[in-house]
Length: 269
Image (cartoon, rainbow, N blue to C red):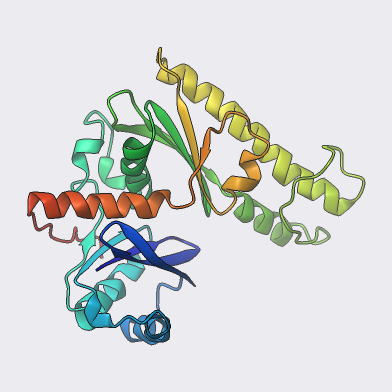
């Protein structure tokens, strides 16, 4: 079985795959100081409830945008699952990256994995929008390669920053308001975060499509926690795929297995 770990700035996702079947998915808030022993103590009852043992895992693959967490995630898989993990980096997925890009080593692992996943399931050129701590837009060109993208503050991050910086503004849930014009402070904030981001998303999709300049239709895929909420009001989004990153990880592991290749962890520690 494969243990796939997606370490993001807000949550770390642990998924168990039996072949290509996703058996279990568990989420834990990100804490870069959490030790391998702490991860194992949290995972043990989850494995037990799923009738699994740590020994059932024979492979591990990790996508991480939290470098400070990598050491302990590496220790977790080596110590408790007795397997060396594959860490996603630009060298590992170089065939999916436009070679003309500046500093490909700076591209986030999650964005690379999403690109790989998009080429498998959807037509390209494509735009992948990930609603995470940051809202990212990543472009898959007509050749199925990652060719660049956009990073903007995520909606939740903007909401938190607004509350912290303005003493009289409350922290509210992100919700779709019936009207753009708010009739109270809470509605005004919700409208600004929801409809403001809708306008940003629509505008950036339009500009990216112009730059892609393809005769073929550009497929737009949304993933991440707020994807479904925003997709309901952004007509340009064609698909919502909650498991895009995990599907990318399982495919990359499959390619590694098929090619019988061992990849060393890229030292980002």
